[in-house]
Image (tube, rainbow, N blue to C red):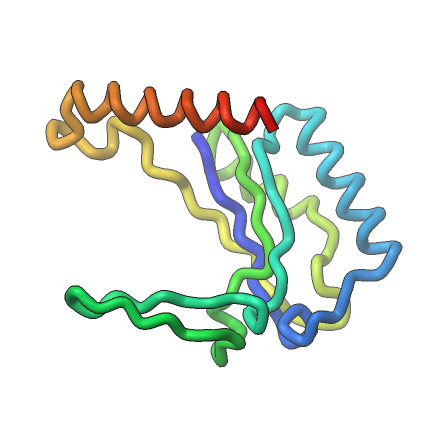
Length: 145
């Protein structure tokens, strides 16, 4: 089971407050444990929404909105992608995570990815083959960087 683990933003992350050396060291040790356990597939921190943009879709129109965005509690400050046996295993790993925003309340959300079998008959063998081809192409491109 693949999951995306989403670290919710706080006032400090949106204000661009960088983590302390101690927090960076603690998170590095946590990430090392994830890698050694074969769990971590990827992850990164995200810059504040003031550095971002949103594109709103309304019919045929596309409206570009510059950050910052008002609702901090709805914003993501970072993420991991993990391969776990179950949602319970993901929860246990999150429980081991150092507090990502010392002095502030925050949340970490865990969301499973859709897998091919979730789409049923609509995801035809041809579409599955094309999806596999695209994934292989992405892996080749990442390997050449």
